[in-house]
Length: 174
Image (cartoon, rainbow, N blue to C red; front, side, top):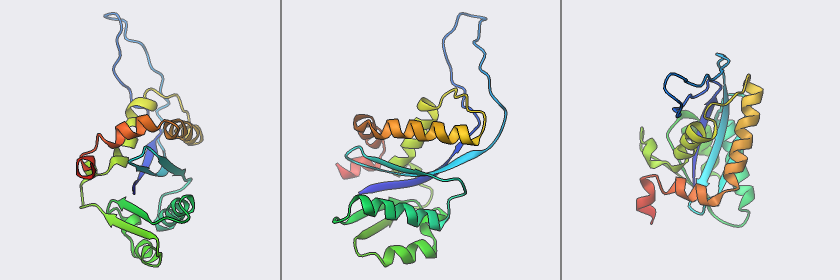
């Protein structure tokens, strides 16, 4: 079972708090540029993270491509997906695709319930821990940075299990 979500990773830096001697606030350079990098990801209870970066806005086509990617990674097993009700995952095109797949079962979370999706915590960790104070100057650099950080996160199942079980839906599954 995978919990899936899409996000736009912003080029705008999130500046966090730090310790410094009084009156000696460390300067942090930012570009002031705007932009974002669209990414789809899915996390499971075993601490596995699958993600895919895009160069354009995420539509039903990208959601279907991502579901195909997940199906290829589990060629002989049934795949259960949990998604939000955003337009791309709940569109008619996506729904028709899902209904045509024998081994794919998708459940949609109630509207406006991000606390029930563990994949939301992946984005939270990426934003507040991994990318804090980043120095990316454009969308290409941000995309490379996001891909590097998500790859590192995907190779750390212990971190991902911790992220997964911080979500309230984990209480229902355990």
